[in-house]
Length: 277
Image (cartoon, rainbow, N blue to C red; front, side, top):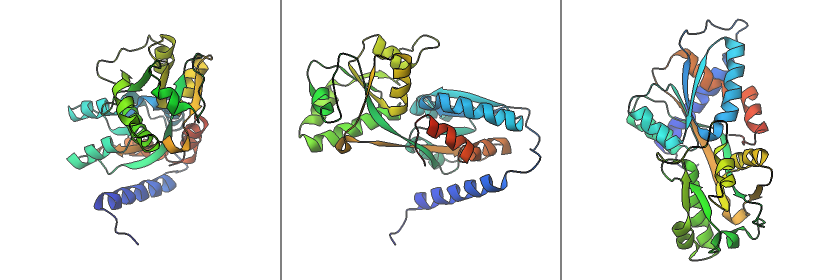
């Protein structure tokens, strides 16, 4: 058996502890809820899922949950500056691992997965087989999120590296033309009630936008003329979502984190297009 890094061992141990907690934390009578709400900071792509999961948790336990959404990297920076997050659900594992390495946060565990898709305007006719050629066209504007601030942007650049293996020189072209339209500290925000990616595409800010498949499907539901194109196998990039809890967080925060990995919450995530951990 290959040697495992201390970080991997710690993550596995944390995952086992959470799994055990989830198995035993189902008493006939729910414990008394804390007066203060659980402070949950989560990636923007989790908004719909976590809103439903938190509502279910509140109905079941009486425990209030306060949700704060945003780009994972920006949320991590806010937490490091002192904001009172107790649970952090990131669209990657690097940001929660960064918090854990600084101390005061548990080793992260993966609680769900996602993947990248291409969201295109109705004027773009692309299939998985023609997607790379479409992205490389000089007349096609390609939007992404902002790397480092938002993992979706980091995953887009991972796709560019994959593309370079398929067509040498593709990375340089894609890197040069990518429009970082969302996820940054200064990125324009959509009007209230509008989805970010549907709004960006409806405003014709890009012809193709590389985002999570869950985001792309939600944008198409909001603006039906948009199209969702799956990535070809050679370009596929998976997104592992990491979850961590502040070490001194109250039991209610640990209970919410544990609930995220149990069947009811996982069913919500999978119904909305997320993958198994």
